[in-house]
Length: 364
Image (tube, rainbow, N blue to C red):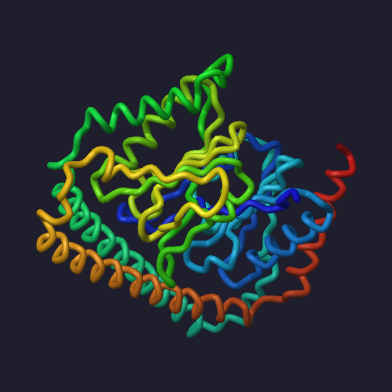
């Protein structure tokens, strides 16, 4: 059975602040629709309805989820049509100048006369609190990353880097030999997961479900998992092999997964908070701790590691609590705008957009 949907994030709440990958994820489109309007005016609903309608028409849809509310959408791509639709309020870095771009003004559905001066003042105050909640979350994530660096350092001291490089070169040879293209390719950059108000959330299983081969990288912080993926990604790009590069939703400077669509293969960091295990034919584990680290490292640093893990966990819980506060504040802002929105207009705009895309399909 062909899967008619793919699910990603292209926006993340990270240790380096809000991080966006829309410039890569939405590159090369023939047309882009940007939904403009305040929160609470139905943008995610339009995106969801449009995605469902396209899939009913047996069209593949790429779903880009909100890291604040993973059940809601920030954007979609109708794959066969090569058309994107995004919430312009949250999708920073959209390549609007790279293709034909049309704007759908949902702000037209807001009756500003129904917004009192008190409500406008409330929105302004809540917007400040929302920014503060995000800033507090990012600060806590950054502190957690620094604690994680301490954790990594303990293991790095026991790392056999020559062995780790040998593993990388062996994988490069086995995966890419005989599959090179005629010219270098530009990888597509995405997130498979995100830090959300409900904790870490990912789409690994859905993204890899139909692939023939899955390599689950096991190991410890500092055991070379991200470095291995970076070497593989660079080799694939140089060799002209298509690769999807998935960044870590906590530290976007690190990589967590590569998918080689033409090779039907995924290789990914399969440790907490996205820990999975081989469960079917074509699955295999690659344990960097066992292969490239001095035996007994866990035991040698057991006391130090336990203390670091506790501090790290506490900071991650703090960051998640700040994201939960941000969600509650954002909900309060949305509620005010929702009450002033004429959803008959919103529905009409959504139906017009559906008609345009379906008519575009019929012209192909």
